[in-house]
Structure formats: C-alpha cells, structure tokens
Image (cartoon, rainbow, N blue to C red; front, side, top):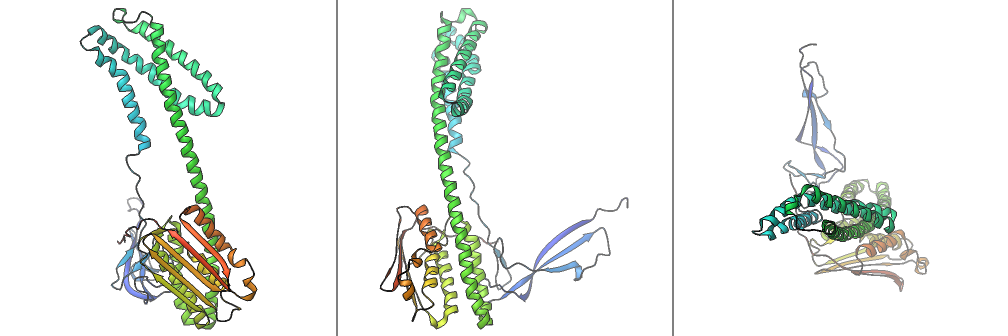
Length: 436
C-alpha cells in the first residue's frame, strides 16, 4: 500500500537467568550443569497480527555444545566471551621503507649535488637547474625500467643474454634522449661540455650500474624470501596433515571409552561426556594455534588421564607425577598426548597387573616427560608399540619444530616400554584473559 512504512525486523538477543539442564559444564564451575537460556525475539513494526508461540514473539534458541568463540557463564549470570586476538602488522615495514628511502637519497643527491656545488657561479647554477628536468625524464625512468621490468621479467624468463641485449638497447635509447634534451632545451651559452655526447653517455652508464646492482640485489633477495616462504608453507602443510591424523586417532580412543561407560554406568557417562566436550574444545581451538601455554597442555593431559582413570577404575594402576611449574612456556599443542595414548593402547589388555607411569618435570626452560607401561608377552618382541601412527607423527613434528632442541628415546626393556622426551622450551609468556 502506498505510504505504508517499510517492514523492519530487529533481532534482539538477551540472556535470561533461567536455567535449563544442558550437557555442558562451564570450565569456571565444573559442577554446574545448567546454562542460561538464550532467547531470540523478533519485533516487527509497520504491520500487526504477527503471532508467536511465546509472548512478544520470543523463542528459545539452544546454543550448541561447542562455541566459536567460546562462551562461559558465571554463577551470577554474567557472560564471558573469550575471543581471539589478532596481532596487527607493524605500520613501519622495512621492506617498504627501504626502497622509498633509497630513492629519496639517491635522486636528492644526484640532482641536488650539482646545484649545491655551483655556489656563487651563476652560469653553473643555471646549467644545473636546466639539467635537473632532463635527469628526471631520462635517468629515473631508466632506473625503474631496469629494476622493475628488465631484471625481474626479461632476465628471469628469457635468460641473461636477452637481458644484456635489452639493457644495451635501453642504454642507447636513454643516452640519445638525454643528449637531445641538452642540445635542444638547454641554452648554448650556459653549457659547460663541448663533447655533449660523451657527457651524455657517462651519467646514463653510471645510473645503469647503480640500477643493475640494486635490481640484482632486490631480485636475489626476493628469490631467497620466496624460497623461505615456500619452505614455510610446506612445513605448515605437513604439520597440518600430521595434526589431522592425530585428531581422529584421539576421538576414536575416547569414544571407545565412552561406549564402555554408557553400557555400564550411565550417570558417570554423563559427567564424562561433559569432560569430553572440554577436551574437544581445547583440541578444536588450541590446536589451530602455532603454540599454546604449557600449563594448558598439561591441563589437557590431566583431563585425558582422568578420563582413563574413570574408564579403567582399579583395573589399571595409573600414576601421574608432576614437578615444577609449567607456567606460560609456549609449546606445540598436543605434542605430549601421543605418548600417553600409546601407553594406554599397549599397556592394558592381556597384561597381569597393568601399570602406567607418567611423569612431567619442568626446571626452568627444560622439560622432561616420561611415560612407562608394561607390555604383554606378545608385544614384548613386537615393534608395534614404537612404530604406531601417533609416535611416528610426534617424531616428525619434533624434528620440524624443535631441531636440535629435543631428545627422544623410546624402546622396550625388561617387559616395559619406556619413552623419555627432553625438550628445551622457549621463554615463558604471561597469559592474558580477555573478558567482555
């Protein structure tokens, strides 16, 4: 209808203090299994007759089990959102500043020095002033053409011979242009050189030499940078592939434990599911980062061991000892868990009185991580315990990320499989909590 106001819909999100049972446990309050209801209401202006199941058109919107970004609730009903902080690139980039600074100094000196040296000589000063436009119209384009096109295009794709031939033609062309400029634009009474052709070629050759050196230096530096970036991309791709193999392996083992609990202890399975959601949240969010605080990795490891203690109960003796303060030392995420997974894979089953011993010691920047488990008689002579996917992956990750900074010893001795990892950590960082 003409003149009718356009329909406008506003989505309003609010947090109610009502609680509903959800299979979610806040890391801030592990014992709380209730979460606020998120209500979404739609208010429409301009038309009437809009109906909804709830007053005001509100409806209940259930949050998923895993959030992006993570959302936690306090007992007072306050919502805390942990977001990812992206580092801004530095405003002053040396790779951009250096060429600008180089050109300013070069051309300022090349054009300004003759004017400054003229002093009180009016004729020479006038000649330098007339010469400056010719320098800008011939020498500057020559420099840019050589560094930006001849070297990166001709020499790279067609070879050195084509580049030298093209450079020769370019030098002849700009020398002729520079000579023509001095002959036709600079008055004869202010010229200083009788042999203008010679003094037209010499400056062009000088600029050509400087531009060739600068262009080759830039070209080879870019080649080295490109090779380093290509190597880094290959490293990232390989690490991403290795991590993608770890995640399904981890989920497979935990789901087997969960199936066992569902069949035997349903209430306990519920709490384990909540704990599993926290582990998966860490696996999804933290494993995307290049490094995580060592304290977070140790907490993740403790949660995993706690799940296995619930699963096996008193059937398996699990001993976990921790010494020292992990603090904020950065470490590759999920770098320790494969050793523990391997111990539970080969250290339980057809073994009399199975025992799994795990110890973690932090002294300054040195990390010592040891995992020991008993082996069954059938596996004592087998290499499967030390050649699984998990251990192969972690070996490769250590080689890529900690070259010369780690020692890994793994082997069987007297019916025990023993893994000892010594790792040199980086400097500790101060973790910061982001709340909103």
